[in-house]
Length: 181
Image 1 (cartoon, one colour):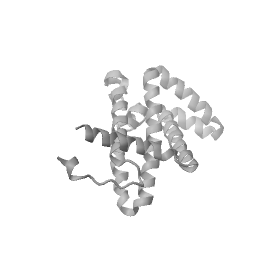
Image 2: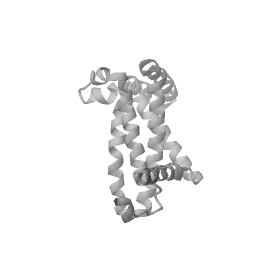
Image 3: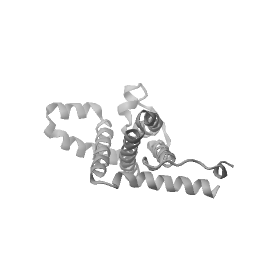
Image 4: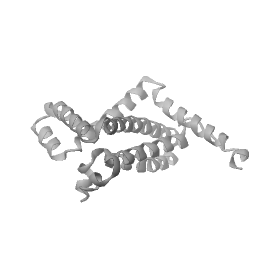
């Protein structure tokens, strides 16, 4: 059991370290994380976001600041922190997945589908009524315990699980027969 845990921890550390091995990957990871955070925060209040962005791209920073403050007042520091952690984990997962697809070719596309549950689960909790309202479940997030923090934490856990399964995209690790028993 400890060998299994040690294997997954080493794969997780390798997957988290991979995006920061070159400046280009670090920039891509940071960009993915920032875009994810912006999308999550802007989708918390879609009508306001559309009005502000419709008035001009110069209002994007005002919308982000106002909706970040609104998110903090709505879900508190823990919820906002989980949203930031989710955005960073998404940046790492996307960079690692793209590296795996680039190195493995068409067989690496399967990894893109395995990251989707983590992206969708926590994404819905982070954007709140934005996505849930579009789906017809506007009150669903309000009925969740801890203001959806458990769902956010679940999405982060899915992303961490994905990263611990995938590991470093350029390393091929085959399970030995001793690990299977």
